[in-house]
Length: 135
Image (cartoon, rainbow, N blue to C red; front, side):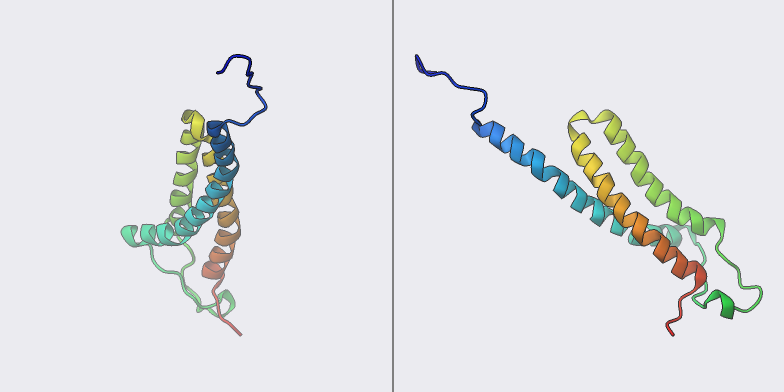
């Protein structure tokens, strides 16, 4: 610093400006990444789990029109939803616990993930379990 020139703490420095910009953009990017992760976990990971473990497909016929004796959802069906989604929550809980500098990003990812999962999964399950027939 030059003699007689004092720098106040209110003046943004180059690195402080970049850090502030990243701090404000990171949650938005994390939430968007969480939405994408929620979509792929609810679609691809669930169906991949079913393919790997041979979970039987449910009948697409609405419940009121099904023949007697058509099986409903099995334990494997419910596990195909619980395992991939639960794995994301477990990994993110570990990241929140251990990765101090990434808590903002991880928290934003979980918020985006939860929003998509909480809207998509009940709709998808109700169509699969109850059947879907456009009338």
